[in-house]
Image 1: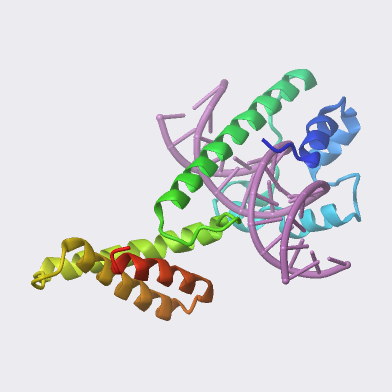
Image 2: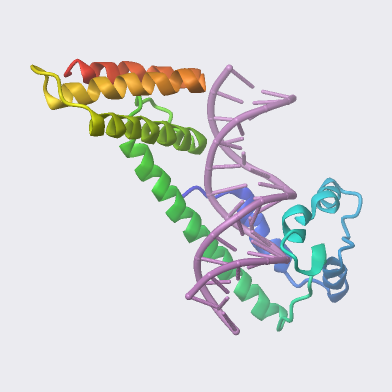
Length: 182
DNA sequence: TAGGCCATCTGGTCCT
DNA sequence: AGGACCAGATGGCCTA
């Protein structure tokens, strides 16, 4: 796993013996970083939009009862680890998804957003085929695979036109070769 | 150098 | 109560 510089820094900084005054100030929302870019951003957004709508303590930061700094530190680190594991599982799922959607293989792997977009298009295409098959019959002289591939090509092309996503057009060549039985 | 993508930390909220 | 989930913040890496 790549170790990110920030992670290393962050994992030590905030919990290394915070002074009581500093902690209290943070809890009350007036940071010692006042005026810094970070604090400005926090002031502006402060998770307000989402939190406020949830109907609890409208945007005010509730002070959590917490034990000693050490205990809190340990709980935070455990929580960080769980979050890392969760994100790793999520990334594994993305990788699995990359491997089942048809696309042109290049050195550069699909980004997450590309993966989701392609998966969506692929599902749409398959859905179209299934719906089409449920009402039609196979033409004579063509194998099931050829018919399916040709339908997939047609459907994919249609979705590409609708979406206007240029980058996806490369996939047509792969689908086309599939339809040729190669 | 700007912008995209990503991993990680963080703390609030939800769920079991 | 504690873990899962979520989204904002941050900084590193890479590419055009």
